[in-house]
Length: 345
Ligand code: 1HN
Image 1 (cartoon, protein in one colour):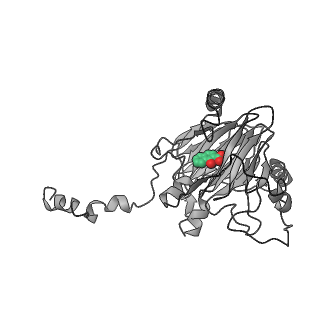
Image 2 (image 1 turned 30 degrees about the vertical axis):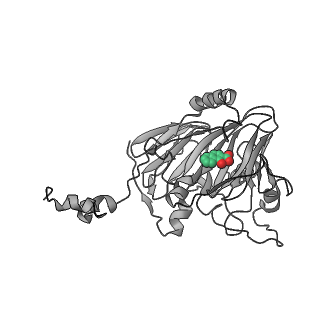
């Protein structure tokens, strides 16, 4: 009885009839508001260069283009739990020190001669490097190279804000003092099975501040054709926290994968959301019937529980993808599910 005036009365009493909401609150399976999407490097890079000429880092704390999923515009996010953006900093510029409870990392796309200082440690950047900025760590950026420096920024703020656990603070000076040896975290820990015995974990994050592309490439090269890898993902490696063997931060997992020439992946779906950055090569990922064609430095998003498969469209060259996901959250809450699935198309 839709015209029962009792429904109207409920609205003023802060109450609602569950039977009218049941289907939306308890769907048979998840349906993300995020859509499959690809952000074009070729189209966005000129926009970054434009704003680097028209907007100073005094006017903007960070010069970043957010990669906004068309299904997640308010508040803006890239997938349900995670954010991606493209940041540019010019030679001679610095970016104000601050900290936030959101975990973050940078994946370097272009340039050299810049560093980020993280809790007193200068961490240097080169293309393909992964630099961690775990939650509540002070961080500022400095660029003393000769060409623009561009990187992918990743944060978990959509999740942290949904949990209403977001705090932010500006450092009282523009830059924090350097109090630790340069690249200390990666120099002490980035050696696989050799861990410093005099140190102990300080919180839930990996102590490796920088996973260099040189090391990542070495791992991919060493595996070469010794393994088939996964039918879904090819040769896929997880960046790990040496203290735990688990993901690099409590909310974000990071991976790199090589799709051999002609790779035609099996279809899959899982509750985790994923964001990819194309390191090299060209291919396509089919997501819920939508074909996302990608090439170097493009970014693309696969929403949670969407069905997808990866294809390397080259018959001669490898494709290499960097990606990050919310799998640590799903697993720690007992919400991870994954299964074979056909994305169609
Ligand atoms: C942030 O702190 C940075 O430190 C980049 O470079 C992008 C996007 C949203 C919120 C904080 C940075 C960000 C961010």
